[in-house]
Image (cartoon, rainbow, N blue to C red; front, side, top):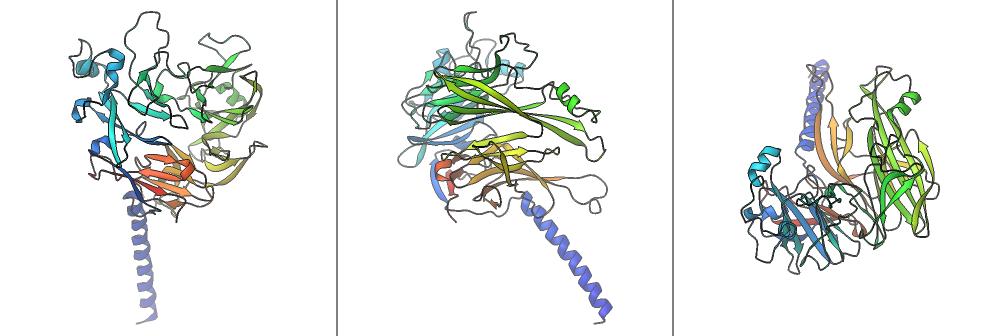
Amino acid sequence: MPRSKFFTTLFVALIVGAGLWYMWMITSAKLEWGGASPGQQQLGAVADTRHRAASQYCTGVVATPQGTWLVARLNGDAGQVEASADVVDLDALVRGKSNDEPEPVGSGAFAYLLSGREKETSFISRLDAQGQFQLVAHVSAAACLVASPDGASVLLLTGLDRPEAGSGDSVGQTVVFRSDDQGKRWTWLEQGWFPKADQVAWNLKPYFHGTDEVWAWGTPSGVDNESGEDAPGAISTGVYYSADRGDHSTPVMAAESLLVTSEYVRVKRPDVLQWHTDAGTYGDIRTHVIQLDPQRAFIWVSQRFWGSNPDGEGAHIAFNVTTRARLQRSTGQWQVVDTQRDDKLFIAALAQNADGRVAGLVDQEESGRHVIAELDTATLAWHPLGELPSVFAPLASQSRLREGHFYLGQNSLLVNVTSEHRPPRWLYWWSDASICADGVFYSRDWGRSWQRLAIGGYLGILGFQPTQDRVIWAKGNWYDNNDQGIYSYSLAQD
């Protein structure tokens, strides 16, 4: 074969091979092929796949020292799922009637049609000694299950509206239920659970320190103090603390607001002529709380404002600012003793393990790109460790966290990400295209390197046991996979 023909054939083969490799990388990422299955075991099974119907919030598995719980949610009423007579109708506890009874005029399907809301039902199950998840209760709303660290108390934070009450009902929070006997009996907490933190109970993301101490938060009061509830020199941080699992809670107040306004950003970056105001005066807000010991805790309030890049390179830049409040407990009350502000930091996620290590997903640039970092709890400095993984690696791409799925175990870090890859313009010249795919990854070296798990990335993680480094999952959602099993991987094993 002439040398010129040989090189031409080799060049064509390389081009074809590169194209096939590229198509394989895109296809395998989109179809979620591959992934590790470390220490796979079956955690339990459901009698009906609808009992594990998953959504992007509030559904999944919560494992405690006293029981393992499963929350599912379906559109429609409770009658679509067969249940035994001892399954608790939680709506009846609130309204004094069963969902099977006729609904009054102005409620039911017609009211849902007028309001634009679709009726939905949450089903709560508990794992029995035979490895079967048994239904114990249902409620006609979204419901997030939260348990105390010892598993003795279980709370259902729901979106169920309170029944109509007189003017004396000042709580205003959607309904919260509690069980102290592992789901046999439930109590409606008529005074709410951290009711001032958020009116929609399932919005709460409580943080437990030890068995009984718990924190919850909403949005801090702004400098304009529009609500008029804050006294001068005592502005709400939006954070509330309870020493008795939320039975009683007190607000944490500060001398001034922990928020800055968009005017603060304009002064800091006068070169940015166009700021995007979709997020309002205070931008995107994230609050995080960590208690380090009985006397010391911290609040971080992160804000992000988006603007157009003054250099014209790239569509947007992110101006980040995080206000850190140091708390000290005196005579049983937490007080803000000082605040510091970092004009480059945004904390998207924060987690603490049982050994007291704290890791976060942080941005310290203007690109909105996050990295894994560990917090030095002595100096409060952030030490970057690595970037989020990508399902398209080694192709160029960007990843973002899905639905707050950032978990810190004893020896592992677990994330669920969405990755975006943009094909080169010479390959896709007629438009600016992008391809997105999801994936679940874990790391044993705090985010420096990652291993993909064989878990569907869209709904992905059903639950996580941090003390055992165990992730819980199922094979697809109930309508696209009839496997009744719920499984686990051990991230501490090879």
